[in-house]
Structures are given as C-alpha cells and as structure tokens.
Image 1: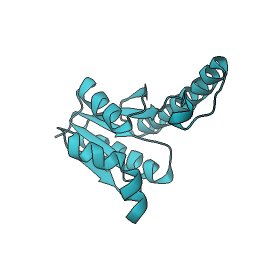
Image 2 (image 1 turned 135 degrees about the horizontal axis):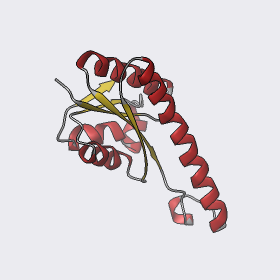
Image 3 (image 1 turned 90 degrees about the vertical axis):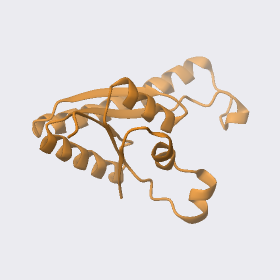
Length: 147
C-alpha cells in the first residue's frame, strides 16, 4: 500500500497524535518514514515583524531552532525504532511551511503525507490561513490529516 510516509511535526500535542498514527500506519503497511520538521528563518527586517538584531545573534537563534528541530525528529526516530519502523529525519529551513512539506515529500519520494490540523477555527483561520489546508490543496500525493 504505502512504501514511504512523510510525517510532518511541529512538536505540539496534536502533532504528536499525527506522529503516533503515522508510525502505526507505517508499521501496519511495512512502510518507512521520513520525519520532517520545518524551521522558519529569523525575521531579518522590521517589515517582516522582527527587530534589528546583530547577524551573529540571528545565526545563534537559527542554530538553536535547528537543534531543537533535530531533537524533535530524533525523538520520532527513536519512537519509530521502538515500533520496528525505519525513520529518516529531515529538518528543512523555510518560511513557506506548506511548500517545504510538499517539496520534502517529492524529494524523498513519499506516497503519503501525515500531519495534524492546526485546530484554528473561525476568523483566526480565515486571517492566518492554514498550512495544512495549503498542503491539502497543492499536494499531488494523498494527505492524511489528524485532529
């Protein structure tokens, strides 16, 4: 059925549910997993919502974010190994989360994307948009969304 499943995670409790479900599905189908965490870049200008910060500080902050992301996907790998599932870890740096998820799925030849819905409703969803919705509407491979 599935040979390679991409599991996108952000570390939230809802995202952890997607990780558990994705790993279970991989175990049932004999698929391998690509665990993905997308890390945004630090805002570099006032117009991007950031304050002027020294370049060395920006580099340090982005490294902290990348290290935390690697720790998160490493936990998924350990969890997968405990369940007998082969897990490859990927940390992508991008401000375009949905595009990074779709690109990683394509690059790693995944045949399913598993991710959590964000849980926003009403006006917040309308104003802020939804990375999950963007993946659903732009992905050419199936997407399993967990609530």
